[in-house]
Image 1 (cartoon, rainbow, N blue to C red):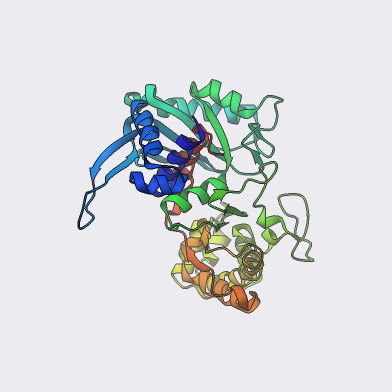
Image 2: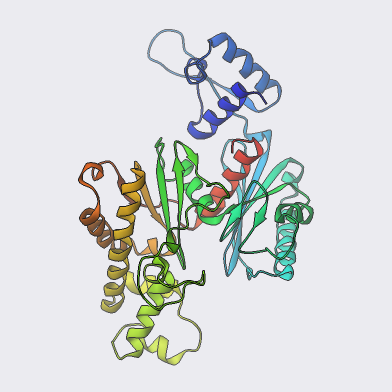
Length: 389
């Protein structure tokens, strides 16, 4: 695919349908050149003419878009408890989805084999699409290099690129992406994104991560390890982070920090609607239970989520000061608490942000919720397949 064709595909992916004059402006070429490129893409089955559009007067231009039936792309989203799947057509419409299939993500060959078995079972349920699936993208927590195909946090027990093993296990080309960056890309294209060139997604889940869209493109960093927001040194505490260090932001502003603080205060005698649950059960308290208690306005949980929001907001102000984005989105499981997290976070941001950039950035909650990873994985698979990054 030549440069002009790739630019056309990129434009259709990012903004949807376009006319020949619009494409000519973007490519900075003549309408005749664009017409030839579109004709070639139509012959290849990648682009379709979706008809004339109303312009009020004069000759009505024709609109061109990606051909939905040109192929399908799969997103596979992993976490510590579940795996979720989605299948999207070429134009970006989800055609199949299956969420929260029980799965234990572990850094072992057995866990990887189980994943491949689950995916093959999923594909067996969608035989009508099998011969047209172009690529899967697997979202994996931790440090990921999507270029080399290596995962350095999970599934790092082999010398072979994990993408090779996944491709063999699925029988379909597979790529990998950091889970938060995939969520970022999904939210950017089909959620809160509305044409911004600079966009930040903060994933407040059990851990804490971020994803960056800079200049309209996902920012991977040199080795694919960008966005480790939760592991900046922020506190002189003695809490050991998952990364093996102490003092990380994640130890005070994340889902695991929220649960730890609530358990400590309940066990020290403070009252909560979760007290009986904590004292009478050996099963771990879940984030879902805590976020539900926040929404029910439990005083203790409200106080702790307010503290989390305040601490997180201080460092989000730093992100905004550095990157000056149009939009910063709060996603992840703790985003389910809504304004109980967002308001103290915004208050802290306003205290610490530079005056010159304070009006530039809109802070909002994510739109896609728990579907962000699957949607982003599908979109990543499509863009990787076209060699867009």
